[in-house]
Image 1 (tube, rainbow, N blue to C red):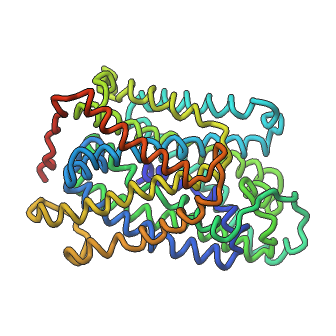
Image 2 (cartoon, helix red, strand yellow):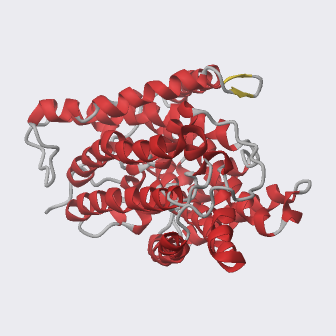
Image 3 (tube, rainbow, N blue to C red):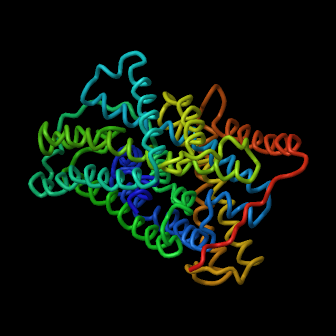
Length: 434
């Protein structure tokens, strides 16, 4: 559950621009409805497929089993390409909060160097094994939650006390749709926990419980602190990425401000650390199936971690450190949303093609329920498509840039197939005995 928490959320940090763009009331509405329309359906889908098919590679294995090699490859491609942008967000957030304490790191290339160092440390922790990463996540969760509990407890003594508070002028230009997209980003990533299924004890029982518990905890960590600050009367224009530190300073003085800054760094580190564990299993599973070079299947002799895959992924992520936060979110949601759509299609296809597949946990409602559960996430994906046409990245719209990346996946598939004329192996895909 703690690892899933960091793969999806990482705490209240990252919600600031939602308030700036949408205002308090709409921000809380977004934070309340998004888990119902976006997270809960994904958690249900993930609970069924992860308990039925607890295979290495998770969602890649589900889509491949349901729809064949081509779509399995596209699922993995979209997820890995999206990870390049997703994983660049967390070093950026780490540096944002670090510079709140030490502005020196904002000068020149110092922030980028800090981000690269964070990539290297998390790669080493992941080579140490899944157990180390998961136990680290538990302690990080406790550490980052404590300052927000203090903020909530102080609010009754600060009711409407910040109406005229002097705050640093913000540079955020996030509007309401941008706030919604950032809200969606804050609630996405539920399927990431599926890629380590073969390394989880009793996955048929563990996954559904962990998913549903994490949905509740994450929603709580977002909504309660934002609602609490609303009661202080702080203007919505005072919010931007990293503002939680300044808000904590207004409420509890410099000690609480420092605690929030450290918590923000912990949050970014914890999210990146947990996601290294998830994403690095995709190249491993693809290499085991013959879709990628065999060298990526090498495991550490002691921890059994896929160290070559971890190092290869870390090099790719390091290349995108330094891109702006909002542009990263826009392209990340676009690519992730398409891969998530394939997973919902796989849920329906497997219900039709393999009705007798043992499913310890089922999305309720039969075939109709399996279809219905994917409607709202796909609908919300439309917002990312609309927004991606106005955002710019590398001199073109995010939509065009994303389309090029998607087309590259199709090209990569046929190129890979041409280099492997004898075809790929089909890994054994039987769920573990319950």
